[in-house]
Amino acid sequence: MSFRVHVRVMPRAGLLDPQGQAVEHALSALGFPEAGEVRVGRAIELDVRAPTPADAEARARQMCDKLLANPVTEDYLIEVEEG
Amino acid sequence: MLKVAVVRFPGSNSDFDALRSAERAGLHASFVWHREADLGGADFVVLPGGFSYGDYLRAGAIARFSPVMQAVQRHAAEGGPVLGICNGFQILCESHLLPGALMRNAGLSFVSKPVDLVVERTDTVFTSAYAAGARIRLPVAHGEGRFAASEETLRMLEAEGRVVLRYVPESKGSPLQPNPNGSAHHIAGICNAAGNVVGIMPHPERAGDPASPDDGAGFFISMAAWQPQASTSKASSR
Image (cartoon, rainbow over all chains, first blue to last red; front, top):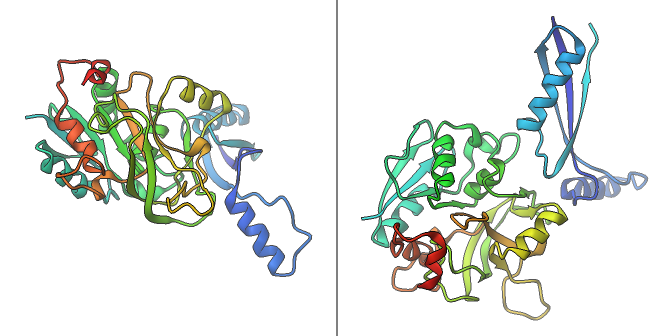
């Protein structure tokens, strides 16, 4: 079995996110003053061969801990597509 | 003659500057390609600046897995001196040889200019030629140089005196070039607990004049003065 895994990596809450701030300013300048608290992260999609979705998620978690996210500055969220 | 291995990754760009600076200080320097598994008996390792692997994912994140990094890990574990400059510092943090991380500059833009620094640790093999508290001016050139770490890690670094280089804080009317990137505690460079692994964002190899120990050349003059049989901690007696 192979599962499509979606990983979302975001700068940790509380840490300065200058990219998010810059995008927020740009949105405001473009006429979207209602946008606030903008944060910019990274989305990664991959196929993971595994017997079950839970196994795919467990492997993806290891990938995040080892490479896809920096444990010092980022948090991640994993979603596994069913079937 | 002491030997320096300058590791080249795809995307390194300060490799020649590092090599020349080491040679001018009287060291024997050679390149080691990142695919190689050993360091050729080098006394020192320098991880130079640049954009290894195009900074894909995060600066230094992919270079960490190059074959040569296992040799660098062993060298460091045996007490061998390792200096990471700019991208080299980022690689050392990603490799967990140094704590913390280097994040996007607070001002968001890439900064390339001279900055003023205080040398806080002069008992490492890379900084022994400087007077304690010396103020030096070195160029920086980075987009991701904002040092970040947990409060606990920052407290530990301060308590253990592991800040090697510190930017000067911004001060109105001061002619000094201050912290260019929003680094926590104005940190520009740190070392590991043993003091043999040092990572710095500024580029001493781009400010080298062998006649003066007051600028970047001091890093390489310090290396040339190292006596390998003496432990890192004994270097402070010089």
